[in-house]
Structures are given as structure tokens and as C-alpha cells.
Image 1 (cartoon, helix red, strand yellow):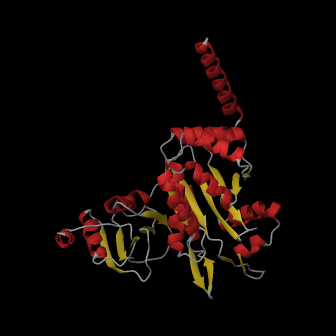
Image 2 (image 1 turned 180 degrees about the vertical axis):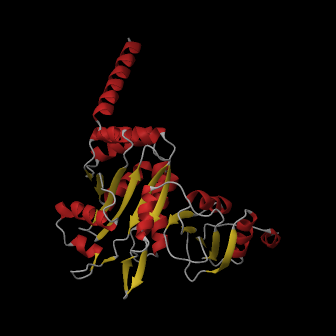
Length: 353
């Protein structure tokens, strides 16, 4: 009897999956080889005036998930209207129209090269509940702290983005059947309101897609310039971000030039890192100390060569890679060594004895 019940349930589940697969817009897009662009918004303006957003590109054809962080503090410069800070513009929009406004402004930032297909919006408080669902107990406190860092406008920009990356990487890497079921229960039991245009069947299909695919998340940050005492979009380098979304292969030179900066108070950290990086055939053209201190090692990719620059991350055994195109004539990658970087050599071991 039990076997018959199990067989019946399996048949029903297969039927549901086949139905979802045949009617899901996402599945149709995947089969057609279309990219899916999703706008993620963390909106807590009613309580803390916090708003953060990013755009992600998912493709059934590529090995990467690509995510670009948008700086809400940039000043949008118009030809015929007064320049405005993006966050201030968003705050003036009525809540029920805010997603459409952010979607429109984001598409304009990317020169309307691609359209946003879906959006997901929730509050900081609800996002913390989701982190509670996904985090192992030993990681929970650290994940919540990282979230607070990423939402803090007073935090250094690199530190802020690295904190976001660590939280997103953790959630993605711990995404499995059990946490997914737990998440659904949390959403229902705690009445978490996620504003989205995803259908439930699309979420199931998207979930099964990620569960069966070993994908890497590549992160980028829109390039900005400090002009006239304000932060503006670097229009000359924005096409490189668009190219980051549209293309997969790096077509530049293979021998990359690196600079290595010690962003801690640890002595000799930069020169020790330089030695290790050079041992692996990288050309280090400059090294020294950073004027700013970082908790986490940050690797700024200036040329969009993730595959090669990932080797530096593996050499150091730490670091988050962010593609941020900037004109640096002597450097292709900038490495800021943070407190999480531990490199030991003979002198260190002798001092410990």
C-alpha cells in the first residue's frame, strides 16, 4: 500500500513538473537561449531611508551568473533638467510606482541595451529573516553583520560591496532542497511580502535550474567619477559594463599587470603577497600601502578577465573579485589586501618560535 502511495505521489509530482515546464515563461526563454535579466531591490525607505539595488543576468547558455551593483548615491546628469541624486529621485516616487521608476532608470543607465524581465523587492527586515532561514547557526551572526555593513552609506564603497558579495555568495552556495522548503515556510508563516512579477511556477523552475547547474557569480560595479564634488556615472566606461553583460570571452592580453596594496597594519604583507603572485607568472608593477584599511581583501578587475584574475584569488586564498572598468595605463588589476589575508613566510615562523 505504501509503495502505491509513493508511486502515486511521484507520478503527481512529475505531472506538475511537466506542466510547469510546458507553461513557464522562463522555461520557454531558456529553450530559446534568451537571457533573463532580474532587478533586485532592497527597499526599507519607510523606516531607515535605505534603498539598494542590483541587476542580475541569468542565461541557460553561459557558465556565469552576472550581477552589477548600482550605486544609489550617483548624481544623474540631464541635458535639459537639473542634475539629481538617484536615491533622492527614488524617495520622491510613490511606493507603488517605485519599482517601475527604478526599472526605467536602470535600463537608461545601461543605454537601453537590454530590458529587465523580472523584479524582486523586499525590505531589509524581511531579507534578514531569509538570511536566518539559510544561514548555519555558526554563520548567522556574521551574515547579519555583513548585511548591516552593506547597507551602511558611511562604509567605504569597496567594503560595502564586498559585504554584499559575501552574503549573496553564502546564500547561493547554501541553496538546497531543505533550505528552499524552509524558506517557503518562513515566507508563509512570517507573512513576508516579496513584491515580484515571478509566477510561483517560474520560481520552482528557476530553483530546479540552479540546483542542477554549477554556476559562478561574477560581480561588477558601475564605474563612477568624482566631479564637481559629486559622484557621477563614468559614461566613457559604461559600455564596458554593457559588454560585461553581453559577452563571455576575454579577448585581451593574457599577461596582466597587477598592483598590490597592503590595506592593513600587518607588516610586510604587500611584499609577501607580491612574491607569491610573481611566483605564478603575474607581472606586479607596483606595491605599497593603501591609505584606507580593509577588513576583507578586495580584487578590482579593471579589464574583465575573471578567469585569469581568479588565479590571484586562489594564490592568496581570499579576496572578492569586482569588475570595475577604469582607465589605469599601468595596471590591469588592483589588489587591496585586507585583514582576512594571512600569508606567512620564514620570518613570521621564526618570530613565532
